[in-house]
Image (cartoon, rainbow, N blue to C red; front, side, top):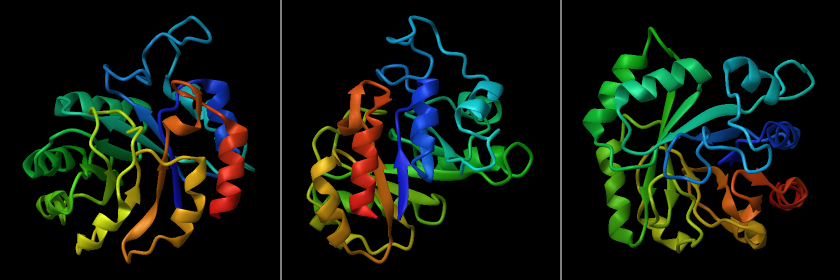
Length: 229
C-alpha cells in the first residue's frame, strides 16, 4: 500500500515523517492554502528555504539508511510554465493536479516535461467525489494520468476534512490506479484494511494528522501506519 503524506513544510517535521518509511511526500504550491510551501512559517517566523539543497537534507538523502519519499507537488489550476519551473527547481517526482485541469492541459504539460526536463515525471489527477456520477469524470483522463486521487468535494489544493462514501468507487471501472484521500483520520485504519478494489493503490494523509497546518503529529502517524500495515 502506497502511503502519501501531504501538506509538508517544516524541515524538522519532514525529517521525522521521512523516518516512518512513507512512499510519497506532498508539497502544496497553492497560494490560498495554509500549507502553501512559501508561506511564512508559524513556528520559525521566517519564510522557509526550500531550495533543492534544503529539501535534499530535509528528506534524508544524505543518510543512506533512510528511504527517501517521492516528492509530489500539488497545484490547482496553475499556469503550466509555473508548474514546469517548480518541477525543475524542486526536483519533483509527481505533479498532482488538484483543480479543473483539462485532459488537453495534462497532455501538453507532459509533452513539455518529458523527456527533456523531467523524463520520469508522473501525473496524479485529483477527482472530487460527491456521487457515483462523479466517478465518470475519470474517463477523460484515462491514458494520460498515471494515478488518481479520490476525495470528497472541497476547495482546490486543500485536504478535505469530510470524507466520502468509498462504496461509490464501485462505479470506477478504469485501469488507472488510485489513492484514497479526503478526511482519512486515525479512526479509519480498519476501514482501509477492509477496502477492496482492483485499482486501489494507497492512501493520502493530511490535515487529520496535524498539530497545526503543515505540521504532522509524528506519533499519531506512526501508530496509524502500524495499524494499517
